Figure: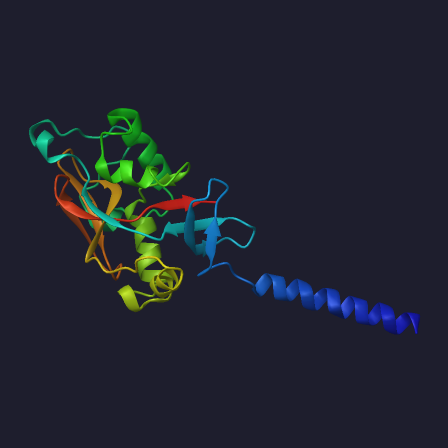
Length: 200
């Protein structure tokens, strides 16, 4: 009887361990300590990942009134080709660089992201591509992350393009298409949709 109990215990432990490994947070809501919420689109499997905001807004990257005095953000690598902005992990560093140079009010896109609470940031182009092309399967408002956002009362991915924190020059930054299949540069003073990310 004791052997049977030990055998069943070992089986149950293995089953629970495997079930936990297969459990993913992707598509679920993440409520942060400050009360802000997002939908998880990347789960590292160790209790950490990335969430995207439930809402979006159309704003400029840099105010239109400052067209003639636009600044190249030191701390953000300028690239002249969309193919070179695929690093998904530079959104926090880029946002920090923008705030360090322009202040919290200097970029409407960054200001909006940070208004969600501590830790929210303007994602880089590579991070947006991962969200839109991989996690959301390139399906725009019909994709699984967009549907999860809508089911939780948020706004799905309906905009054609999304600003990133990746920069091309003093006047241009990169945005990513809703399907994640294309990256293009745009004048920073143009209004484009923005989504905020937060790591956990």
